[in-house]
Amino acid sequence: ALGASGAVAAVVFAYIIIAPTAGLYFFFIPVPIPAYLFGLIFLGVEYYLGKRGNSNIGHDAHFWGAVYGAVLTIVLQPSLIMDFIDKILGRV
Image 1 (cartoon, rainbow, N blue to C red):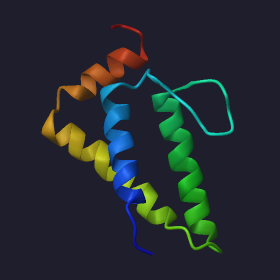
Image 2 (cartoon, one colour):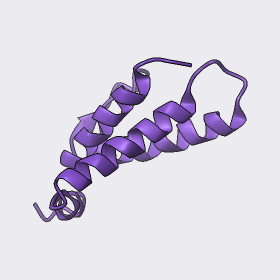
Image 3 (cartoon, helix red, strand yellow):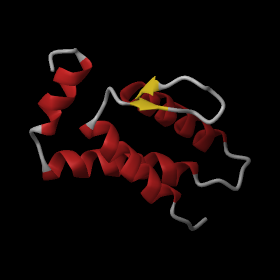
């Protein structure tokens, strides 16, 4: 499978590292979910569906694209780790 969805996941997860408490939406849920919670749900669903198989969707590309986006963002600006934790804990 070839496409841009892994890159889109990378960009979304870079945003999650930068703004973990921002509201993100699932298409079918009309209320915002904190970005860090959205990220955990996304990773869990993509991991499960990737292991399950039986589809023509690149779930592994989504999962590893997301991981790449988060890791690269942290590598480029390590101070974001403490900012991420502070924002989640409500200290900022």
